Length: 433
Image (cartoon, rainbow, N blue to C red; front, side, top):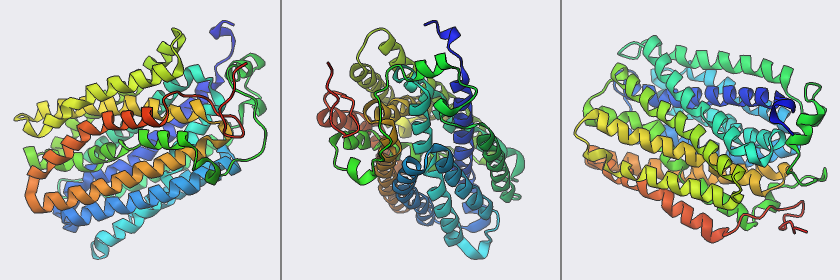
């Protein structure tokens, strides 16, 4: 079957996932961009207080992953995604109402609600990919929508630089803008989304292609408690441990560049753009590479793990970031690591849909996401305390862990799951004839 004759509506659905993920990361990363400015000129936070704010987000994010993953599998992708983005839109708006008198606690409460809502983005997106794409295209599709994370951070940096003054004037408008973008996406989602078999714009040839390598599934729901004891769930959770590193780049990267090189809000904009453009490239390239290897005849197990090993090698030099004497050398090391992480992430997310039936995918992603968020909480507690006690020297430990965590995670994945065998409706390995 020639690909040009099968239809392409699935790529329009992917565009909506890319847009939602971009908005999601604008919302969550704008605080990282504004952090030094809000700390020094508006609210007067300490590093420990700032860590409490980011921890509040991650606690809600971890809890929300479990809840949202189960809700999305039970209610379906269309409703589940609406619940998620509707919640985070409201709490994004509430950020703009926080006053200096509310202090860090006001921000922590707003971030808690934002984190709970935003936890539904990746379970919804990965489930949508599983519904709309064959396995041979899923890593590439995941890499493309996951690239929205970096576009969101770049846009957050640009938005903050354009709108916010050097002493934090007009910071509220950044959160008002992202809330308006979320409302626009909701309208587009309601008008566009259906499951492929029920969508009038999907021709039979495209539906057949989407289902070409999918095992038949019953309509019976699989609760998250049933997937929790399955060893493959924990292999996926191990793949999500490096989320802690990504949170470190997002919420503490600007603080490192500010402490090490004295960069202010306007000086941070270009380095952030460079870092996350490279991360965008990594996201798409990582998804493309494993998909290309599968098309060449490699097994899914070999293609995904080989790509993740290459990512771990690319990331390793970031351990020397604190030794860089020039700002652009440090930025280059962080950019290379960010690109490697996003390539890793594109393949890590795909593990869930490679192995589990579509109806359990969101629950599995939710459990893994909870583990990643919990790792991020532990990292925040450690980074905040180390920095307040030992100053910028504390970043050495953070970057050392950031470089070494990926090979450790890959080793854990392979020990738990030496072979990636798809699971059926009963969550038992599917026997090949």
